[in-house]
Length: 124
Image (tube, rainbow, N blue to C red; front, side, top):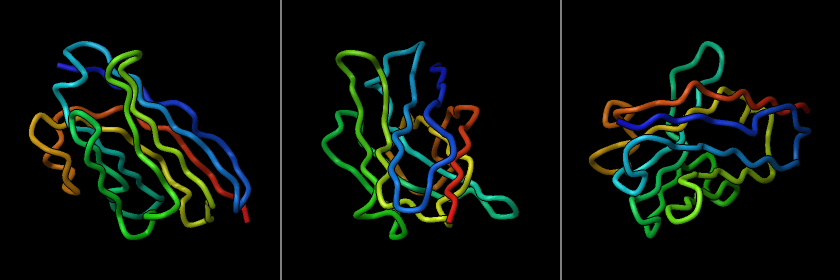
C-alpha cells in the first residue's frame, strides 16, 4: 500500500497562488495514478485534477481548468503537486490527494488510498 501526506495549505488572498504537495511512501509511487479532490463545508467531496502514472496525461474539473496545474515527480521525491493560481474564495476547501491502482478518474470510489487533507482558505 501507499501512505500519502499533503502539505502546503494555508490562508491566501483572492487572486493569489498556492502550491500543494502530496508526498507518497510505501509501495512504488509510479504504480499509481493520482488525483486531487476537495471538500468545502457542507458540500460533497469533488474532483479537482488527476494525473496518469507517468505524468503524461492530466485531467481537470471545469472549475479549475486553466488555473490549476497538477504534476508529479516519480524520479526524485515521489511527490505530486497542485499549483493553484488565480485563487477564488470558492476554492476554499480541504484538499485531499488520492492514489488509484486503476486510472485517474473523477470518481472518488476509484481511489484506494487517501491523505489526511490540507486546508486551503481563500479570503476575498
